[in-house]
Length: 405
Image (tube, rainbow, N blue to C red; front, top):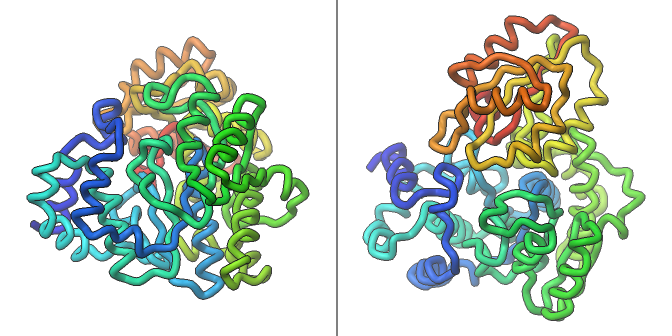
């Protein structure tokens, strides 16, 4: 198979969560355990960091990778979902996995994948571990896909576990209370492995403390230890301050065994995009009119990004907006600005929510605009109406942003 055929085959095997939703969720780790055994446990040859959380996982993972690269290490980075190309998920020092490796890995193991009915996500996690082992990375930063306890990445024993924050997302799988979701994320805490908590609320702190105590793991609350942080990053967005605190706490723990100077840490934070090629985080696509794209897609993320939007200067705000069909609109729409003009569209994936349904629901919250046939059409219409002094915001879903970049 060619690279494109290989990736298509992976997407078609068993539904991947990003495309299909609930039916892709595997309720235990047996599949990934079988796969890593089949591959002779590449994960056991790796030094790793494990990053969970409702929001900020991708930014935090990329910041950590950028700093470790500045310190001279060969760094594997595994994140999800991708925006444009599958290979974005698996990188070493910002370079995407080679197409030939993807093709060869699938071809070599295809009969095993079919026999065991492995999901897209399980195959991809196995591929990342194998790639990082073969390329002999010094350290790998591994982002959790969803949740923690039952995520396919959760067979690793990292140097440090990280939980960025807890908000309500994927409630069908992780529970509909903050305590329940925190319990799922806390499932990545391993015996004796230090855990860094980025943010907590009254409901989640006791959950983290109890799990860390059970696992005999030192626990660090970055929002307390680095409360006075003034360092910045090239990742714009006020919300990145919280991620920077988390990252600085992790780096402080790593310094006990790894050589990372304060200067390398500072420079790494300023070179996140350059070092890791991360996109879609308060990304400014152009000026006059200013166009900002952000992948925030749940209540916790949207609330923070809408606060950031209030700090921008503009005459008229235009919003290109689309969501997936399992999104709890009641928890997202109230935070969107009523004074904006909206261009509603369906992201071009199986799970995309029909734009007419979205527009009708939005109207209940005082959000007015027009229904478009596609995300690119919505963006084109916003650009044709916007003047130099206006602002266009693109968001609601990772998949909306992916179609614009």
